[in-house]
Image 1 (tube, helix red, strand yellow):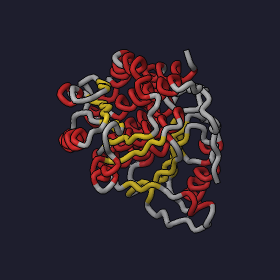
Image 2 (cartoon, rainbow, N blue to C red):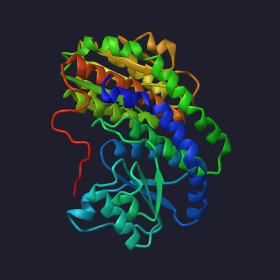
Image 3 (tube, rainbow, N blue to C red):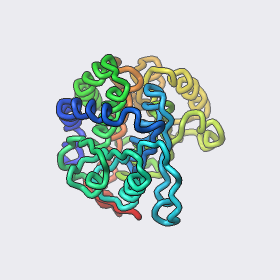
Length: 344
């Protein structure tokens, strides 16, 4: 078993520990921060940046907060940070070591903003630079490609959203996630056995929308990191605005399409790309749309749409890992990458 496979399968335990140990802490954070900000600015890189895309929909839809993604280069390269008046500055980083992310938090504090870091490293420079910190309890993540730290970051954001909204109903829904993650992983073993079909794939597109726009980016990143395949993420809306012209016979398109508000649009796109000859790999909890796939990757039906990114990414993780192995690559040590990347 690879290290990455082991860490992918640890995700139910990690999420359970996060909810067990941080629920009360998240409530205290929400109480301390309430009334101190009017919008949020999030800074992150890599997989954490994809988690931030989830946060845009999560806090917008359920907490009615405007959320902006920070531009770290304005802080570090150009030395022209924007005014952050009335913002809660939130950083997401597995390692908590990247200087540009730390600089945004430092500048936020200099401007008098409340600052909060979500990390897997409680003693990291980022955790120490931030006024508040939420630990994701992922444990040591040794594989270069993030898996459990990504879903734990999503879980931490979901936990904060319910705490900020004092929403006991949504918190109860969130508590069901670890068990659903476990069931999802067990139901996807066939993905590993069938990934070899795509070992000669040179390019593909990954498409999601709404809450799962983030999933499209994270699945795309996993495939690029692990397999060296040119993989582009899009929303279904943006894909129609030009990139759909790439699709021809045999062009692989991965669609992330759990049921919810974005499902109808994703279903319509399936018909469009099938008509163009696409090779369809579909992640969904809907049996009808899965029947149209060349490779169906089913999800359980028990989660509301706002929580589906915590399970819809799992088929992408498994597919990328299995495809790397089918191509003779080491999924634990992708070429040219390091576990901790520090950018300035």
